[in-house]
Length: 341
Image (tube, rainbow, N blue to C red; front, top):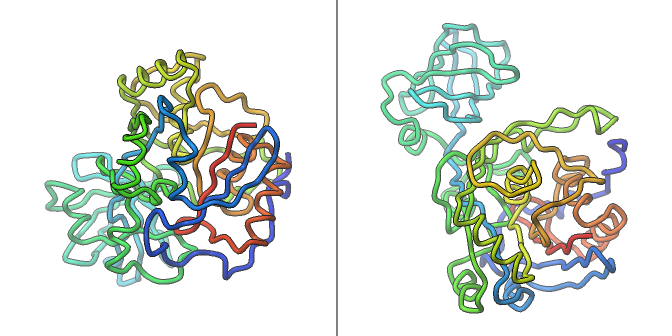
C-alpha cells in the first residue's frame, strides 16, 4: 500500500473550528461495511441503532493542559507540548524553538514555571519541572488546552470543557478521544436505560496521533507508542456479550486500538501496557464489531485504521459522500458509525 492510497480532497471550510452547539447535535454517517450502504443520520439517533446487551466501550482518558510557552535562558522563544507525564516532576515533551535547547539548560515558561532540559529521547525532550510537587496541578494552573494544529484559533475558555469528554476521568492525554465528544450525560443515560452496557478503558492519546506519515510505503511507518489500561470488568462484560451473541462497539479509534492490542495473543486480557499497534487494511479484528469515529485527516494512520475496519472502497465512497453532503471534519466535526466489513 502506498501513502497516496489514503488521500482525498477536502475543502478547507469543512474543517470544523468549533464544536456543535450541543454534543449530540452532530451528524452521524452510518456505513454498513458488509453491504456498503450509507445512511445520513444524527448522533442523537445512536440509541436506536444499538440493542440491549450490546457493549459500548469508551475511553475515559482526561486531556491535560499540555501546551506551555516561554523562552530559553538565552532569550529565544519556545513552545512546549507535553507528550507524557513520567512522574517525579519529569515529562516527555516536544519543543518548538529556533535552535535546539541544550541538555542542562533551563526553560522559563509562563506563570513562573521553570523546567530543566535533561536530554533527548528520540524525537522528544525529557524535562524536569523545578519546584514542582504535582505535574498535573502545575499544568492545570499554567498550561492551555492543546488544540489540534488544524484548529486556527488559540484555546479559549469554552475549549476547556468541549475538548473533553463528559466522562473524562484519568489525566494523561494530550489530545481528546474525539468520538467521545458527541456523548452527553443524557445520551449515556438513554443508552443505559435501553440495556446497553457502558464500560470504560483508558488510553492516553499522545501528540504522535498528529504526526504525519513520512514514508510512501505504508509498511515502513513506525507507529508512535501510547499507554493503555483495560480493567477486568470490561473484559468480563465483553465476554458476556460475545457469549450472548451481542455486539462490541468501540467509541473511537483509541478504544478500538486498546482492545485489539489487549487481544494481541488471541484472547482479550485485562492489564496495562504500551501499544504500537499499527492497523492497516488486511488486519483481522478480534474484538470490535462496530466503530464510532470522527472523520480523519488524509494520509493519516487513523484513516488507515478505519479503511481496515470498514473496507477501502467503502471508506473512499463514504468520505466522498461526506464531502458532497458538507459534513464537518476532524476533532470538532461530525461522526461515523461503521459496521465491520
